[in-house]
Length: 100
Image (spheres, rainbow, N blue to C red):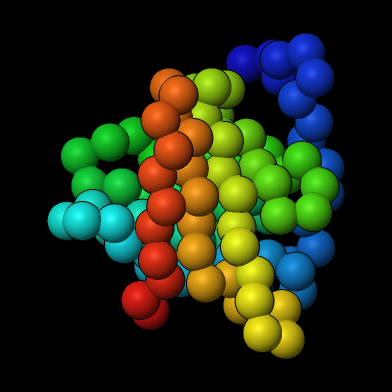
């Protein structure tokens, strides 16, 4: 579909994408972040459609097909790896912690 107003689809450098890849957990829910062959991040969550992320700059992404879903990665230490994934989905804020 067409991107929404104000939503960008910036190019994500594969070397930058490395920092975001991995698995994040909150409660019993696991979010697995992978890099697709189209150079866009994917977020897999059990029993849900796969989110395709559009890069908005810095550590921010908007998820398709749900433009209301926004994903932010929190980087720490030497900034080579994200430690948390913050998700805004239909309002509430969820913070998932990297475990793998």
